[in-house]
Image (cartoon, rainbow, N blue to C red; front, side):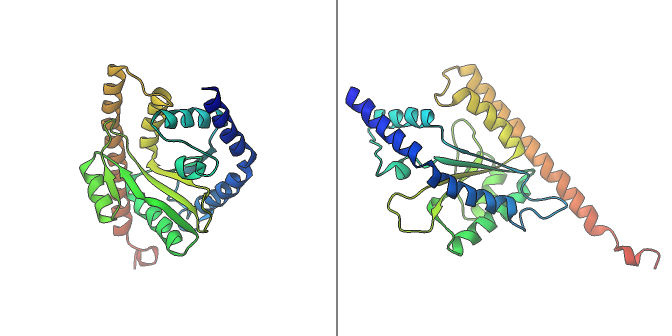
Length: 237
């Protein structure tokens, strides 16, 4: 056990010593989302806000220990391929109809060769209408038992590094973020065994979906109203 602890400590130390590598890629991804002209156009930007973090070394140690219990050994050489959320982003938007624009710009960036996918994007949803949208965008989707909802992208720099810096990007609505924050406080890093809490979280996910759908309806109504308004230069013509 002492030998295992020494190994884990050495991996965590390597990570701490090389955080500048992660911070460089983190800064470039953050700039993409915060400065992109399409996603930040006024008066109502597509992106509401962006959260980012680099994994805390103590949390990394805990995750490596959990990986070991699952039969997976994390080393300095495979750290970035085994732990894919060392850099984390949450990209938040107000309502679901804004998501296709975010996805389109990410795919464009991939297509232009700035980033590469570590694995294809994946959407987590239980809502049938959301599933239709993800299918149309050709995004793989699945249902989690907890009713967790978000879209995940794993990206890395477009280079030949065998142990590349990797970044997990989660895209979700503000309503979904509320659910995620509550779930995270209860179930991370170790899931709760309280059956009542699990059921209440599932109920909350239904309420969150209702709120997101209502927000879509509000903005669709607003857009429809604006489209029907006559141009100013035609008023009283």
